[in-house]
Amino acid sequence: MTLNELRYIVAVAQKRHFGHAAEACYVSQPTLSVAVKKLEEELGVGLFERGQGEVSLTVAGERIVTQAQRVLEEAGMIRQLASQSVDQLVGPLRVGAIHTVGPYLFPHLMPVLNRQAGEMPLVIRENFTGALTEQLKQGDMDVIIISYPYEEPGIVTRPLYDESFSVLMPIRHPLTVFESVTLQHLLDENVLLLGEGHCFREQVKRICPGCRLKSNSDGNLQKNLEGDSLETIRYMVAGGIGITVLPDTAVGGEHLRWDLLTTRPLAFESPLRRVALAWRKSFPRPHAITLLWESIRACNLNGATLADEHTQVETAVG
Image (cartoon, rainbow, N blue to C red; front, side, top):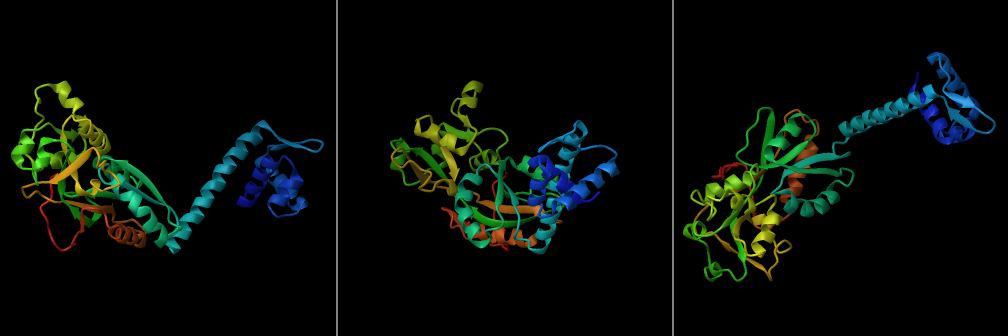
């Protein structure tokens, strides 16, 4: 049994005609017919019923052709893997990102990376840090974008950029009279947070350790004043429910409704959030990782400062 023989029976099944199948496979009809007959004899079962002008699959033939298609697809994957080992910038790169990074990074990254490596499309996924880490360890992701602190055995990280935080509020909010927002201001306000599982939720609570929802004793209100994404929270703020704290990369002009919302910096020094790449030590395409790192740093993200790999910063707990 050979891949060519499998390719021939799949072609016959698709074309329902030996002559047309031979044309599709760029071989003569006698060559294809002999190969199909040889395979049938080897398997000890007929794959096709030859009729006048048309060919149909037997019951056994349907099952065998379906499996043959899978085998050919897997063989194609082997060729693709071999090609990628020769040129690490050819073939998809599976990239995951935490929810508070992906929507603000990927729109900038795509055109940059496409210019640098047009044959390396990104397969993108967003999730929580824990879920992305498991997918990375299991080989379902090639590289993920997370925030420090982050340490996992067998996984390498490389810092990308640092960013601080800003307070988002309705444009007519009383705090807009101030040039910056103090810790006491936050303590006196309904501060909207991301729901459980988001590392940025914990980062905000680290910045403002006493920060609680004004009616924290009401569990239902607590739940209603939490959002599944920064964009959901942004709309809640626009609706006048409260204020929130955002990473500076999420404050860009393309994301902010300046007719409804405005921002103010924090009046006190807060820990920076350091965003980084993480990948398995054994990942066989290091050039792809390097290019991704360089492309992200070339994006000029609003509010981001390129991280110095040799400088430690105080990072909010994630």
